[in-house]
Image (cartoon, rainbow, N blue to C red):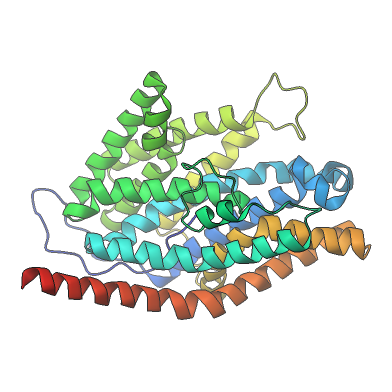
Length: 389
């Protein structure tokens, strides 16, 4: 998750195209406090996924030494729905990517994504691999050739095991970026192009389900697309105001998205599930994902203007990357080695992962992300000058 996706104020609008884009109302310019509310939703989504991985997922038993369902009988029943934090991430990603790509060239878009995603990702790969080598009893380390492939973020299509369990969502995000770049950013982001993209992607997802082939599923992402599409349409509502067409896209995305989430996370015939989920609660959480971003789009969360939300939002991506496997290592050490009480272990692990996320943000993202972006820009300009000459 995403994640991605952290620009808070869009670049100035390109020259308008009267026939393809309505004039935005005077009060439609995004404000800092609205983006702070979005940061709050992002850290909430990350914490939802984190609690799921610590207390709502059966595989965590190898870290705790016993099933977390036995350790946290009440919490685990709620934590199992934390997996839906990913869906909230995807809606937010659609909103923020549309916002941050406005007025940018394809090269700018590519450089912003690479410089934003890779430095923290590489740091998480190194730290997690080191932890696997130090404590193989918790998670066995991958072979060197597999770890090296993981550095590309292309391990899934290559059929290689993941160093980071959560990085499957990064591959989903990367495909969204590619589709949006090819069909929208390449020619310049406009209202009309985004709307056409949303409509065609929705139809493609439905047709991909009919075709039911691995290649079309991989390209179109029929199960994840509704969440990104809903986020894109909500940003247009934020920028230009409510419109029946845009709300129709959001509503259709919600209807399709809740269907995917229910079929993926609820199986009425399952007999060996770790924690039973209710389809009604799944529907409720998916509805919250769309409704909360819609509240940001409509300006209903202007009051959420606390500065700490910006700081929390900056920690979201590195926290999301490191919390799962490194959190399991921490749980194993604190609970099984030092005998710390389970609930204290849970709280301490979350706080330690947030601290580690801050260190990655401070020592890796802030110094190396902008430097990488400037270097790529400088080299692109140099090559461009040589080509024009």
